[in-house]
Image 1 (spheres, rainbow, N blue to C red):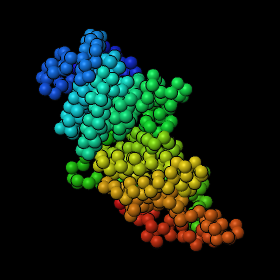
Image 2 (image 1 turned 120 degrees about the vertical axis):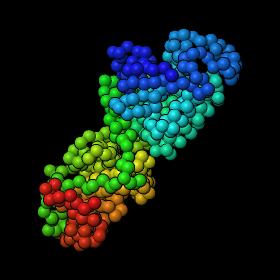
Image 3 (image 1 turned 120 degrees about the horizontal axis):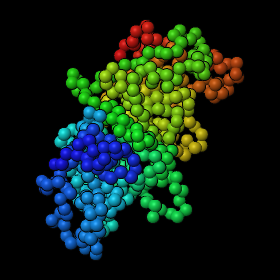
Image 4 (image 1 turned 30 degrees about the vertical axis):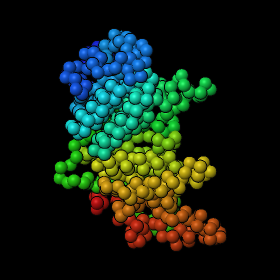
Length: 481
């Protein structure tokens, strides 16, 4: 192996940017790294072309060997990817970095060899995979033999996923074709550098009238396909935080993660006298919302974004945070009607946390699921059903706190069965009192009576067995977990 040290052969002053070489990109995010050797070749991968390589590749593509030789002379590499065992902020990881100057960072058979070896090494050592991607897709000169490497990569990714190992992707420029559709879009956390070209279709094959914004990091973020755009000078620190959150040692005392404790109440402490009084307090503009609860509960967090299906809901926040020395996942409604993209993002969060063995906290606060025509077209029913299923099948404990409005199924979808608490300034109802009165053909004067009949106050919910208890402020002590 070849020790890259802090620089990996690049200048010590190198900073992470879109156009770095493969080794510079590794050095820009890693404290130290040691390059991995290619399977069956004890010498360094850059020692030259594989002896078993057929002349001009599997297709006999005229000039392919010459093109590879020129690429090698230009870059000092003999393939489009460099793999390494790296330390990032004190955490070990297997890093895959693409060299775009080598045939456009394209994936061929030997690229597949190296990627498979990298994923295998990660499983053997129980490490995450960090992919620093800059690729134009599959290598034409190797035809279907090259394209089939995407299945190979997807299979390796699935094995690591089943082993409970997180995968991170950093999208450089460009990230297109099969590299985006496997290592990129298939990662658990997807970060992108500003202005990077990202999309399944590269610039030369997309429709001539296509909107370039859709193929940009910014467009992909807006469409819910990546988690964040990270400026180059913040990339190393951001990766360090993510690795610290998702790769922290599990608690040795129990095979199952301990439940997240419910947060303390941050708002009013007295209980409402009437059902309508509970509604008024929950709808108060100054009532503490998800932002306040997350800030008080965690001493550091990172968020994911988007449903990976074309949507983002700003009314829900999902991610991972640190509390009392361990990682807890969270999905928090922010008091607005939750859209289908919000439910799908929450379901994605719960399933990721479940796979990594991380307990989950949900904060319930919504007047209900969005019910406009756009929400129906986006699959509101299916998205809610998927969220119910994610919570119902989670093997890790899920703790839920009702912090405001609990509007029907849109709120219940994020409420953990048998592990739901409530704050004094909240309510939970099968339907909003106004709507119930309208359905029953009651006038406005009867809305207050209807709210009482629905028994939606926190104390009613406790008596009905819907919640475990009502949480108080910090000075009153923690709720029973």
